[in-house]
Image (cartoon, rainbow, N blue to C red; front, side, top):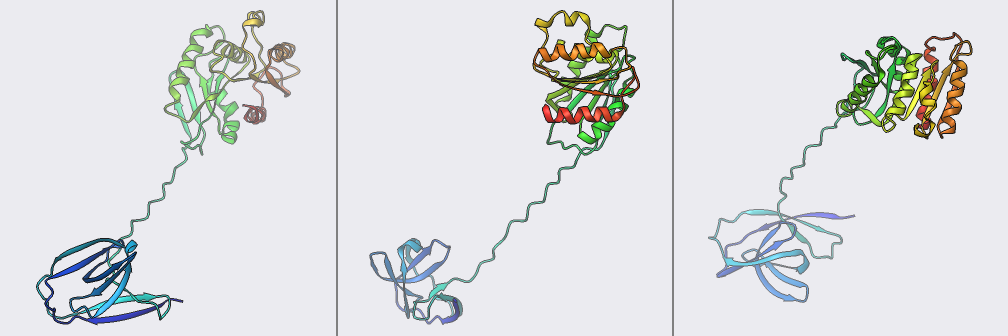
Length: 312
């Protein structure tokens, strides 16, 4: 255990030295006195103006040696010197008075707040962003299509799955049966590209979904924009015949969830579509509900989201 000794050195009147040596140490100490000898790595040094205390230092401890005239003699005063030694029989090291040490202020903890739930009403779509998302992550985006431009019905169908699985929903206000789908799908694709810089949307997890004619539109979306759409979720809807006839031009190796009802008039066509896509390397999931040609229960969209989360 180290023994800390406090030694008080009384400085006596200056002898007739013409010059004094200063040792500048690596740790910031400065000692004034006289160098008596330098042998190898050892420097023998006489401390103070009177030279009454002699000690030795290793050259590796010393940063610089300065020789300069002594300053005018000051009245004698006491200078406390701290000597720390491992053993009592070792020479004591004389330390300078302690300097004040300033410590940097602790960094403030940065808390990244989760985004609050949002509903953005754009003239072309409703965007639903569930609560609890992190601005540092990216989440799947579902582009949902209704056969009657009823965007709110698509938000309602997907909301429970979106809240549970942290998915963002964009429901079109323009897509509907009887209106040319091509320009509307083009506008939606352009709108998605503008979301990337504003909201935490994943560029690699964009899904097209729809009910009835909207399901047909989601198949069209995947075919027209294969680099954008990675999967489809179709609720009682089919692929248009003219796309079925262009098998060699249809995109390959994507994902599809078929939400079907056995009493729906599109049921057999959905079975045909599943085989068509699987022949093109698509991975598919089939799930059914009772009720016929209608929007499926929210639990079916949750099931679709869970499966896609595992496979996207």
